[in-house]
Image (tube, rainbow, N blue to C red; front, side):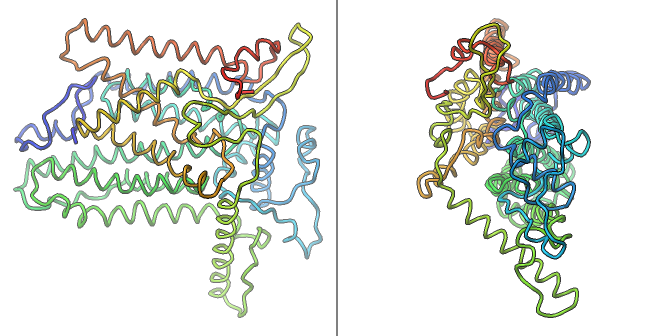
Length: 534
């Protein structure tokens, strides 16, 4: 597959050509262009814009929105008890009334009966709970962490897009598009787990892209100073890869669907290593990758994520009152038996959760199927009320979980373009983005067909950054290489800029029904693109 081009996609020589001394470094790791200062200032400014959007009236609506009814209470329980506890029937009203004492009471010898059966790992809830611990158990408090990770996601995608394209402008474009995507915006203002999953998956991908650069730089240095052999050198400690494994383990510890990305990205990272070894002319690059790189992948993308996942359950292990905590009662005394039976109980709990997810087939008015997601055919109404105060007899206040149509429909075309680009050039960036999108989307087809599982549009959250990366890569192709005629580059930049402007206008038009502004009913209805949005 081809290497990074220069800024705005100037194509280098094919990696199938023999490597030439003095050119191999630029071929493996092309230099960045532009000011290093703006490489950070630009993405930070875009992230600041996204922060203003997300933190403005973050506590609005003052309500428990959609699945916040689960996560706001579970998160508060985690920071107070270390495990999820059963809440009172009127807990939502009590929280909104300023009373955090919402827990069902149990006798001291029956506290395990107050344990709540939860079906998602605890990390995302711990993060939500941190906001509640700082700001209190109120809408702002339980949404604070979601807004923070949403802003962090904007910064990450701007930086990783810059690394992939060697263009700060294209990196800022990616960050701006994520900032104004409707679904990413709503998840950044709502205490659901999917926004956290998106951030961890994107962070893991970004770490692996950084590891790719670092490994190829080390390989180039070896090539310049050592004689060629069949397989090449060991590339030393791969801390970016370890960080990627840690982030992807955190994704799995937020929602189990993170495991699809973990497996796919581990394979992708090995293939990148094999491609780098082949690019410098090694005779047995795949043997080198298998023998020298795979052992590190097993550690970084196997052991590290598993350990990270287990650590997030510390609260469950540290107390006897988590759900299923005492399933495997110790038959003998001693710390060894205690640890063994704790792990047996934990393992049984994981199987219980797996059975729940594979058997979840209850109907919901806003459920949708994965083949409907790219075209936004059935979004989720997170919140809707008909208050007064809009100057007309009938008002609406809504939070609609829907993507910005210009971005989503444009992404469909961009992904098709990436398929053609990858088939014709084997460009690694197109392949990586297509793989990530497919991993986030295609597994849900199995669950939809085989299990008839209940699913929602916001399950696409970890796919959103890769849709935007697809748009960014296509924008780079439209702008053209640095040695293209100025007229062509100006025309391409105008097209890319016009797309971003239209996306901004589309987001501005939808903003009132994304941010729970009180508007006339007719204004709300005009923003429903399809009848199925209602």
